[in-house]
Length: 233
Figure 1 (cartoon, one colour):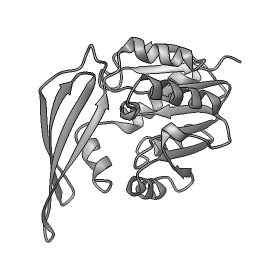
Figure 2 (cartoon, rainbow, N blue to C red):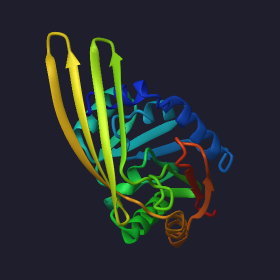
Figure 3 (tube, rainbow, N blue to C red):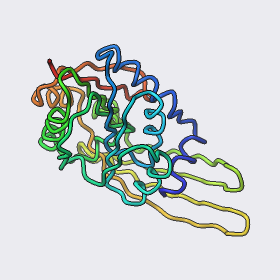
């Protein structure tokens, strides 16, 4: 999955460069001097490599060793940390902390969300900004959702089919992949994701309890919107 992750999503239409530039612009509207950035749950470095062109110093945090290995290749100048966002303790501060592509939804409940955002706040410089790209809100999520795409990048053809079922405030998504390449044959594998469907109010209350002043920017990020929160000076 780490090997095809970025290729697949870009071929499906995800524009990491534009998303990074949009986030940077919104951040600098709040902190024009922002120079250092930590991307939490940075994955393969898909956003981070573009943030590296927009900020003087970038770092990443990622739980998956396979994803982290890809990120080291993608962003060789970045300092990358292996670890879980729930246990963030890097003993340094950043002007910007980002958490992109719905990764925040892997937190299981409001208590984890609040404590994680509090640790984000603890790692901010005065006037620093947190940018969180949320998963779908409970009130806007779809049940029984199926999607599928087939794309070809170079010699490799990839098919992704997903089925999502909502159970309470959790989105259970099963994703199947078929990858084919001349000379290598066909490979199939599957993933399961359990993503928490927080309400917008739960996000905003968690930011407030973490001591952050939050604003929600709608429509962007494929319609999920973006939370921007700053630490008072």
